[in-house]
Length: 141
Length: 89
Image (cartoon, rainbow over all chains, first blue to last red):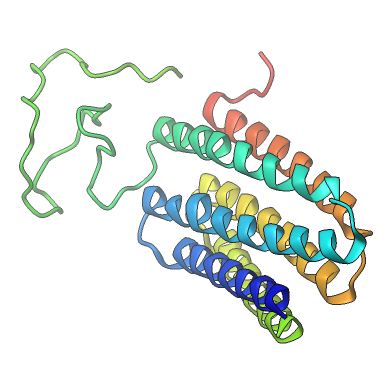
């Protein structure tokens, strides 16, 4: 009975987090915000669901089912790595961002970027780079 | 309790996969589609685990493990291709 409630609660938590992550992927306004949904909420939801499954089958079979433990370990190791690689690729491709043009503070700024054209005024915390030199961290092509 | 929760979970994850397919079709940039595919394979793993719980069988977990490994390799290859134009230098 206690086990039933535990497994059911974990299944509901995992399913709701998975759904929230996918809603975030579908609804958020630009790529860098969209990356948050799958990489955090969906990974947490998958982890909770697989832990529920591990608990259920460990009790019903009497032994730990190794592939499930491997799945959850593998997911938790690979989700940040793939998110990092995808975010770097997006930086190099210079995809659209809601903050306009530059996607990171002090990052590579487009040469033709006119601040204030289509974005709300925001305070630049860093001093603007001297003109003429393309300063900032060099993103390898 | 568990049966109702598992059916609820299957409905939720099916809805999540439909939303991922929407982003896969609509994504304005190629990198959006890569992220949508990444989420879609994680949701496929979750769906396999839920179906395994529903049918009370263990046969789906090897398939889920294979999807996890191949999906990660595919995401890394797609991201490297979009970043550099080649996968292996």
